[in-house]
Amino acid sequence: MRPEVLVLTLMATPVVADVTFRPIDVPEHRYTGGWEHFVGGGLASFDCNGDTLPELFAAGGETPALLLRNTSEPGGPVRFDADTPDVLAQTGVIGAYPLDIDADGHLDLAILRVGENGLLKGGPDCSFAPFDLDFASNDRWTTAFAATWEGGQNLPTLAFGNYVDRANPDGPFRACDINLLYRPDGDSYGAPVALEPGHCPLSMLFSDWSGTGQADLRVSNDRHYYVDGGAEQLWQLAPDLRLYDQEDGWQDHKLWGMGIAARDLDHDGRQEVFLTSMGDQRLQRLTGPGPKFEDVPYDLGTTAHRPYSGGDGRPSTGWHVAFGDVQNDGLDDVFIAKGNVEQMPGSAMDDPNNLLIQTKDGTFAEVGETAGLASLHRGRGAVMADLNADGMLDIAVVNRRAPLEIWHNVTPGTGAWVALSIVQPGPNRNGVGGWIEVATDPVKGPWMSREITRGGGHAGGSAGFEHFGLGAADTAFVRVTWPDGAVSEAVKMTPNQAVILNRIGNGFEISD
Image (cartoon, rainbow, N blue to C red):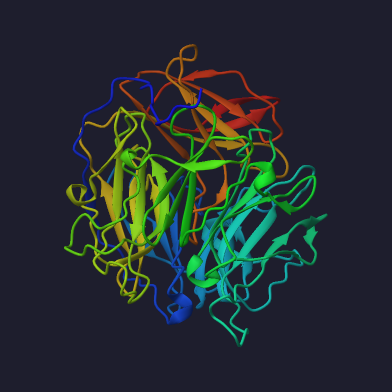
């Protein structure tokens, strides 16, 4: 069945709560720089010292990048201290994405730069060092990244999206650079494959949209510089590397693409895709045949096309987008970091962040101002994660030429929750490309589905626990589809805990 609107069946009676976030004091940090840093400003979250609390790594542009070590007490106040190793304190950083490249149990970092990109090997207690993987990156303006594991490979396939070709004398308009795909050659990387044409990407995401176990690469591109002749893109990796086209069902979408995120909102087993831009923000659903995506109805309330406060009626500019259940009522909400590119006269200057709360009929309501998130800084990269292990999702945003902001979720009366992370032997230790599913009733459902990905957002991503709100439920059932397609049995567990699902055969055992 393909409903004309997204209608969700609640897993449990929704929790009615006044969504509230409180700002916390954080070390001073700003994303700065000229034209090459109008975009970027990514923020990565990942646990680099083994205490299960996520650290934050913030791009700085012309300012050195910053590692914020999480010193929160579990369940207590959110606290961070600046503690940046020299190898991370680079300038020219656009953003970063965490992933365990070599399956040693330490999260590594892919660093996006104006200049040469880098892969840094993570070690104990937030230590990092350059990788010896024959990875070579020349001087480009890299603004997007995604990673996946292809069958039989020890290392991930890496996609780097490059913005305007700064060496093109006829630029910047119609001067988009090519994108690069690094496929492993044994235990190292050879020369990259060009993904061309490139249309100035600002985000990309590997996702198994078809449910076949094959990840394809979706690329969201900035029309400001490709101007004409470009569009959003979907690359097939196998059996042949090619772009999907109309014969496959793919429809051209043209927008000022900034960020991308995917989530199965209506529990039909197919993921919706959220695309941020200058102007309307686009939530799309998969309608088929093939990779055919269509915009959801305007009445769903997700366009967030103009500021809701600040008095500026010009179109909004969306950057990072993230799904997450901030009330733990079993319904995914949406956070969008907003802010003018620099001084774009056709776009709002006072442009507050959005927090779109999903209601039981599948529509979304704006609560950014009442929730305390209506910052008027120029937002860029962001994170939605449980920063102090209290079972509620917090929010952090990197701002251009303004201080980094972190808000602690103190919403009263929230529901139950589980936070889950999967681990498997061998390569692809964290199960990228696998799926976690959670239900409160394994027979009636619905099952909430979550694909494990590395990429998306805008110039930054997260690695760690996947958070599921459960409403009023007092039990949860969990199953895993592993990256190789094997499916575990459903396992009953107690809510309100963060656990690791360690693969054994096709199943798993639970550990703290």
